[in-house]
Image 1 (cartoon, one colour):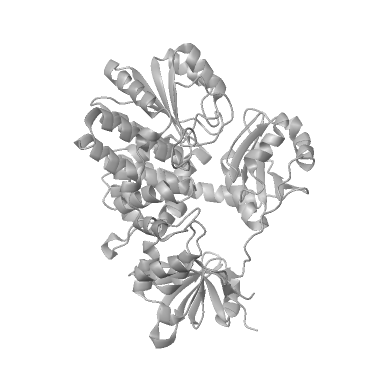
Image 2 (cartoon, helix red, strand yellow):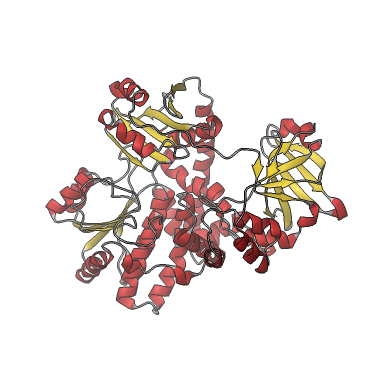
Length: 570
C-alpha cells in the first residue's frame, strides 16, 4: 500500500506562529491542519494548557444549590452517601467526592456505594433508594450517573431523600425528583464535554472553597490530590481532550509523579514509569495500563476492590488491592481471548446501516463492551455485542465511531427494549430474550438513515519524516503537544530514508517484530511492530514505514517507533 503525507492545506498563520514558537516544521504543519485551531490565539491557548482558563465551578447548573445542601448536611451531621458508577470515570469521580467531603469537614467519612454490573446495572434503582432511606441516609451525591434514573429520583423526592446528581451524560427525561443536577450539558456552562470525574471535581472545589476558602490548606490539598483522579477518569472515559479536559488531564498527568496518593506513589509510580530516567505519566499509561486494570474489577466481579485501591492510605493495603486487580486483569485477558474465539458467536449484519449485532450466547457481561470494541476495529463498523444476564434479560454493549449514533439507534427501536443509555460511540441496552428477533427486524426497518461517514483514506499520514528531522529535540517537542487522545490523536508519521536492521520476532507466539531503524549520519532508533511478526521480510524491504513516535524508557531513554503499516517495495 502506498502512503503519502496529508496533502491538504494547512492554516498558514498557525503554521508560521508554531514555527516562531520553536516547533519543528513537520509538527507545525500538523497543527496547521487541526480543524479545531482557527486562530493564533487558539493555538497559544492550546499549547499553554493554562489553569487560569478553567471555568469557575459556580457556573455549573445547580452548583450553588448543591453546595448549600451539602454544607447544611455537614453542619447537621446528616449521613451522606456517594453513589458512583462502576467504570473508571465513575470510580474516580466517587473517589474525588469521598475525599472532598472528608476535607470539607473534619471527622466526616461518607458512605460509598458502587453498583454491581451484573446484578444491578448502571445508576440508581428504586429499591436502593428505599434501602438507603431506611438506613438513615439523607443526602446522596452521584458520580458519573443519575441522568438515566428518573423513576428512582422521583421516589427519592417522595421519601424526602435529597439526591445531588453529578453527571455528564445527555438526557431527555423529567428529572425533577433530583434535589440538584450538576451537569455541564445543562444551563449555560461554557464547556459541555467534561467527564464525570471532572464534574465531581468541580463540586468538590466549590464545596471546600465555600467552607474553607481557596487559599486554605484543605482546598489546596484536596485540589492537588484529586486532580490525579480527574486525569485518569477523563482520559479513560474517552471524552474530547480539548478545552477544560485538556487542561485538567495535563495538570493531573504532570502532578502524578509527585502525588501523595498511595495508589500512585506506592504502586503505579514504581511499576509504570522510570522516574530515575525522567519518565513522566502520559495518557498512554492510563489508556493501556491503568484503566484496564481498574475496569477488570467490575468486568469480572465487584468494583469495590478498585475503589479500595484508589482510596486506601496504608501501603500494604494499596499493594494488596493492586496485586489483586492485576490478577483479575490477567484473568480478564484470558476470558476475553476465549470469548473472541468462541464458535457460538452469532453475527447479524444490518443492511440499512453500518451496524453488526453479535449474539455471544455468553453470560460474560463484563466483556461485552470489549468484544464490541475489538470487532468494531476489525470490521470497521459499529458493533453491538449481546449476552445473557442473571435477571433473565439480554444485555448488550455497543461500540463504534458514532455513525450510526448508538444512542439514537437504540431510541429508534426503543419499543423493543427494556432500557438503554450512553453516548453515540458507546451505549448499552437491555431487552427480553423473546424480543431479540423483533429488535433485529426493527433495526432493518428503521426510519432514520445515518449514512456511513466518509473515512479519511488509510494511506494518508500526518507528517513525512526523514533522518534529518529526528532527534531528542523533535521528540521533546512532540511530547509537549500532549496529552493525546480523543479529539487530538497523536500524529501518524511516514518514515522515509531509514533501513530496518536487527529484526527479531518476539512475543509468546512470535507474533510481534522488534527491530532498529538506521538512517543517514548514524541516526538510530528502536522499533516495534505489534502483530506484524509474519511480515518481517516485507518490512525489511519496504520503501517506507508508517507509525507513531515516542520516548521509550525500558533500559535508557531512547526514541521508539511503533509501526502501524508499511509501504511495500514495488
